[in-house]
Image (cartoon, rainbow, N blue to C red; front, side, top):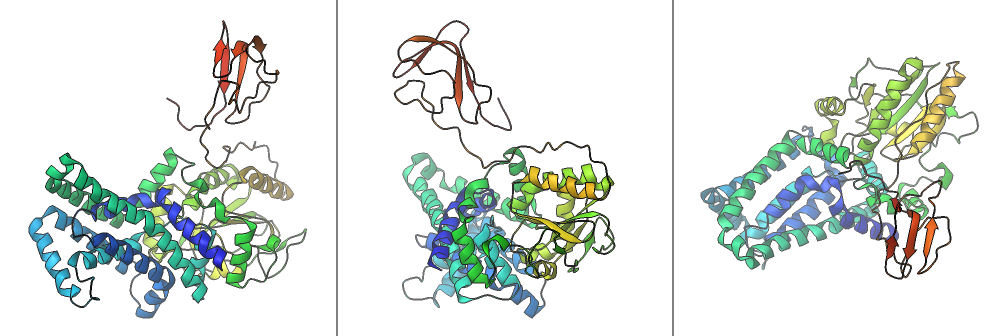
Length: 501
């Protein structure tokens, strides 16, 4: 329990570096411009309480009251827009402050400042509209919440995750305020800055309302595909999986984590559970695994705001194009992390935005999720021609291995497979480390010849150069703090980048 709390807290802190935080940063930063000294504390208080409460109970509230899933989210967007208007129009801001001054009388003594309650409302709105990048810990909590099995442990873990996220958020708010007070140019132009952020806040609200925040995240990931990949990787270890297993009460072994509990996998696989419709179908009529016998079926659990899921989509779309005509059927089972993801209209728009052509079904009630005893976004189950699960994979990566399984199972159906496996290399993003060309601190040196100190020597390039390593060829003199090149000398560095300038 304590280990999960610690890792959830760390996961919340590092979230500030993820692409998921980018759409709400204008709102957080704008909240530092007005409202008194206590507004920043109000913002983080509102965020912690809102995110914790709605993560655990939003699904229950929506079901009990029978209100649309998007209604509370839309209300929060309106609140953000109103605060933006307040920054833009001083008279309107005065009305807002009067409103919060009235309600501050009912607060505890010492917090009766309008700015604090205004901050609580902003923070609560952010907590409701924000869709975080989910790692294994938060994914387990969300699945427990949506299936109605929330425990005190789950609530405590969620609280510490949101508390961890709030710490860098508080630093941003106070940092923005200190800049205004310490930089003369900013101080002289405070009114103009407030109005500029007012416009930015309104535009942010509109962007969230029209789901442009999702498009922005997709654009960022397209330009920087490895951005944020490693931020939740520290959660993906055996200790955390053991604790999550106890939290969910799985009672299964490590090797069976995430696999169907209805039976243990053997060499021939187990019968795949049926697809239990929990909403609409897209790109196809409703399908059943029974009618797909004879084909190879990939059941892919995903949701359209899940960053990890978004990163897998290019591979899925590529496999659909390569193998659909040969008998592969990919079915995207859209199991929502958040209430607004249950909207068929939102899912349809996401499918169009991502350019998905294969069948997608909604699993709003988590019925198919539970049938497979799944615990992860994304998760892939590959079913052979006889309806047996022959392969599973959870999370990102292993794309070559997955495609190899697809080819093997298609071959079993009698199809001749000649396509090459040429998926883009997948790896967690790393920066090239500092490299030193003097032997005193030289590292990552891959030249096969023995290094000769302070003497001219001819070096050769290796046959293969490992990523982030360098090699020399030609005549070089390697000294303590430098390397001197001579005629026709070459330095080669192995690195990866999507764009090179």
